[in-house]
Length: 142
Image (cartoon, rainbow, N blue to C red; front, top):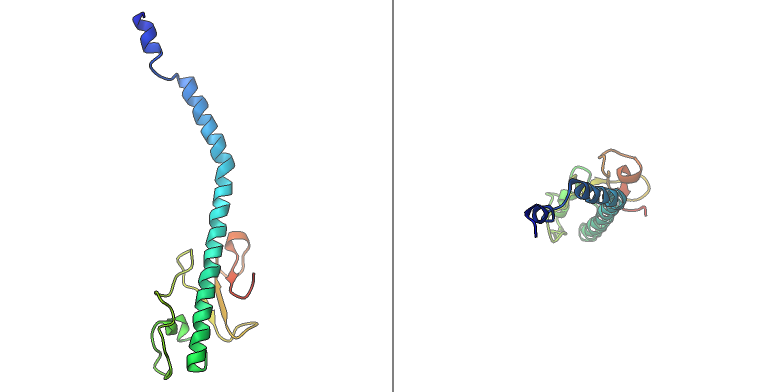
């Protein structure tokens, strides 16, 4: 085989590489948004699961002590015995109090706006309200 033909068949041309990169970019354009949507839904589902875990711990705290933790005590009362909680049987969570999927503490208020307590994550933006990924995730709402 002539030497100039042997080197020509040894690699890819610039045009072939550009075509492959174009195909990869098109695939990323179609798959990327769907993947990120699944990530945001997974974070919301994680928050809902953690909210349920914390709400169950609050219910157990109330059964043992006869009342919910005050706003001043907050969710830390599930981990550490408050001075005025004589019948405290905790800790009420097997692990440390979790942060929401966006690395912020969950919001706890008692009394709540519609129930005994409010328990929520403020979503991606960390501010009340919002829509989409920025929407609050409330324990009581679907």
